[in-house]
Each structure stands twice: as structure tokens, then as C-alpha cells.
Image (cartoon, rainbow, N blue to C red):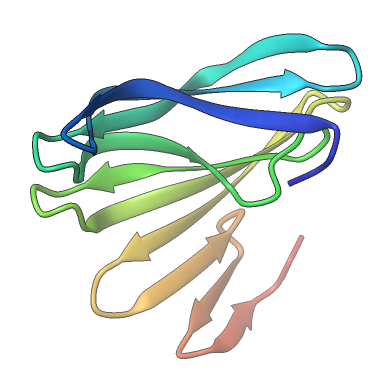
Length: 126
């Protein structure tokens, strides 16, 4: 994590388990300001497992590199289906989208022009 930003997860615990809706907010340490991140976070079931739609912060998130992973967890707390990786550079006001499909094999698609198949890059970057 960048030293200029602190990330906080806000939610409820029950018997040392996260339950219900959890949200992310971040604080710009340099300016001492709190910001709510989009509608980040998601829902924990009564067993403390992630469930339903989630927007998660990527490791290394900070104001100049706002990367989120957006997708869905099944009833067993496992990632399923399509997961979008959204990049937003706070200064450029530019969004870039990549996606990952979760099943027996991983496939990466970068701006729909490049993907990973069995650890090999396929396609081209434009």
C-alpha cells in the first residue's frame, strides 16, 4: 500500500466473523481527507463467507492507481464467472477495463485484444 493512503474496511462482526455489508473507504494521509471509494465492498453471509457481487480493492491501491476487481462470489464463498479489473488514474480521469473469466482455466483479456491461455500471452496490445 502507498504510504500516502490508508484503507479502512467498515462493517459488522458477529462472533469474530464478518457479516452483512462491508464497505471500503480510504484516507489521503497527506491531505488528511476521507474519501468513500465508489460503492466498493460487498456482503458476507452469516458464516463470514463473501457472497454475491463484490468490488474489491487491488493490492497496492492508492489515489494515483485505483484498481478494483469486480465480480461475484457463489454461496460457498468462491469466485465465479466474469471478474472485471477496472483501472482508474485519478489524475487522468481515464478508466481502463480488463476481464478475467473464472472456471477450470484462467483467461485474461486486456481491453478485449489480449488474453492468457495456459500461461502464454495471445493477441496484441493496442
